[in-house]
Length: 494
Image (cartoon, rainbow, N blue to C red; front, side, top):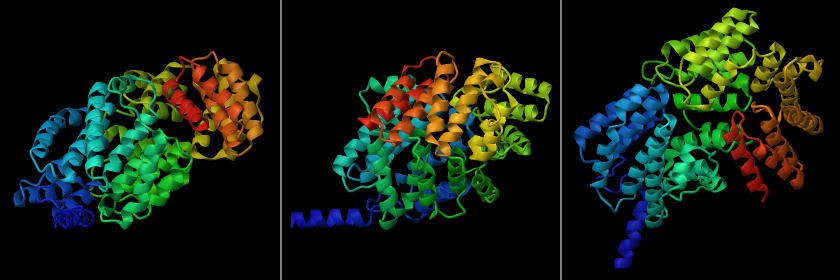
């Protein structure tokens, strides 16, 4: 009889995972709030949460949902003021959940989720020790929950994220802090967890969590794993998400821009849902500016200016002014370019790599116009147009070592994406020879890309040699990111 009751309880857990435990009840109010959050209709979400608080004040899903609202408020605003205002909510929410039903699979899961969300936010604002502590707690809770409830699929979401991020984390303050706790990741293992969830959730009772899984999966494929399948998988898995989701527009356009599907990004952003129901998201103006500039459409200015006018956050200010400076340069306005470079140096912050790099570029010599055009067009995926600005030139046409190195680097990237491996390898080698002692990223990244070409060709010895060359170069831009990708390449080969 006892075995039978256990079997019934276990079966119920698999069949009704959202509402099995009274104080962890994903009822209609909570599901509507959750769906609204992932459409970025945060006002609607707050209304549903308020209703649930009146009807079931002890429901411990409420603090988890409230944390989601805070998380997306900060992510969309990039505001340090919002971060400082909201971070005090974390402890009270965790206290409420920790007093609840330990027999629920949501007991540890909800606490882990709140810690993980704050880990991502702390890291965004440079608070790496706090981020490491939150990851440590989240990882421990999810590991325990996976042992207690091995069929509770949602454990894989947080564990997948932790494994991917930690498995390919560049050296730095956060990695150092985490290493003191003995926490390591496995990038491929984490990606496998996400792939399993992406395929299986729509066929299960956990389907409401699908959009969140895809949100994180698209992020790690693009920005952490730098996967060649990031575009195809993101577009495939976001297809079933409703077009009323502003988050869908963001994910698709971001991944399109990062993977040289520029015109598609412009189309997606032009059709994004709008209105007072949606959370303000100035970053999308910045993205649209990038997309237009990548095709040398100088109407990008309007989008960048709108971003600066509406943005209350701390990120992408330097990078936006850098791009406005490039537009001035492309118009032949040298004084305007100089003015914007002063803004890059004096305005904004350097929490993220884009802004750090923008500051470096503002302090460097004015870029050669043809190299700048080729760079932007390459980023947009317009390879033939990009090559037109370089094909009638050679290294001797450029005066500085930086420009000579960049010329070969740009050629290498274009030939690589065109599938012209031999020409790409020759250009990459010329980049390394010319720029290996310079502080710029061109030579190190050329070695990294060379390793990927040889890896594709199954030339293991040459691939390892190239990856090791990338790792051996020090004190250059993007050093941590390039080195982590090269180490990941060596790990794949081994």
